[in-house]
Image (tube, rainbow, N blue to C red; front, side):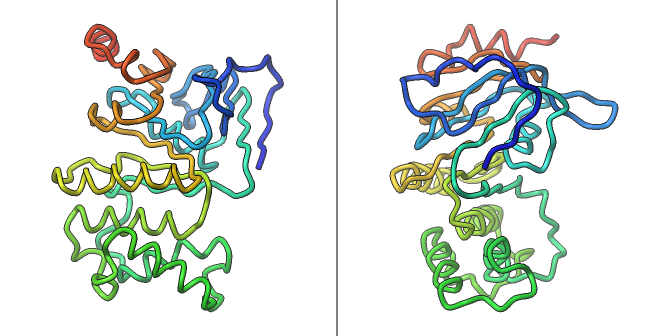
Length: 247
């Protein structure tokens, strides 16, 4: 899938020589009367985990929205290589507690891109949903209402919905925020397994431990790229202090 905007020069090569899955060139984006991202030029490696790091308001969620295709760039160029649309898992709080959905119905929504919301799921669709729930350890919660779940259970249901889309690009917005250590570890292990299975993962996080376990990081400050590369090289105390200092 490719989306083109203003033609510009090529972005720099992906870190480590890996094939890039996503190319951004001088890309800007935001909302009516409120620009957020400013001329980002980056490449995101395929078959790797990339963490988006930065203070609140730095543009992490907006960037994920652009990568997912739900926010259109105002200028610049975006190219997503691959055969399937990305799967986007928003923050847990973005899905209302009052929606009368069971866990299984929530995960089944991940198949709507293939079948549409009104067509009956096939046997293969149901098997895909079962596999996603099993992988997240929530098969036993299938009949529970989404609003009845704990934070960790709810997050796993939303990630299972993303897995059910069977995309090779998974985008997650703060997947471990507010979760206990066991739930964070479970999700971190899953992300590693997904990359081994052929999925490119991009996630926004405030968790520096999660960022350090990623293959690459993009560091954002006030909608601009403050750094990119290997977490061990990038996430130093001095660099982080500069990014988090008041403007």
